[in-house]
Length: 87
Image (cartoon, rainbow, N blue to C red; front, side, top):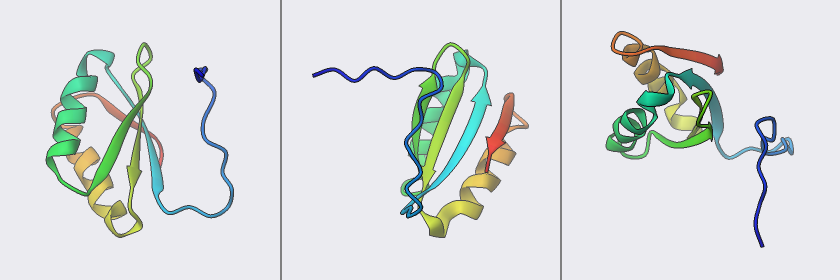
């Protein structure tokens, strides 16, 4: 069984969330680099690529680490183009 995901398909918000979603847009060429950086900070976030061509990524963050994840993304903006679409 295959799952078809469209650009506009995101998980349905059921009102109860165990993680915080941060939506980003970056240069598509930087996706692999950003994934490696985020994964090197263990337990801060789980990166997901939503749209590779547009450079849309999602970070799934535990509630206790939201401030740290946002600070990390903001600090990375000095090294690369990062636009936070949703905090």
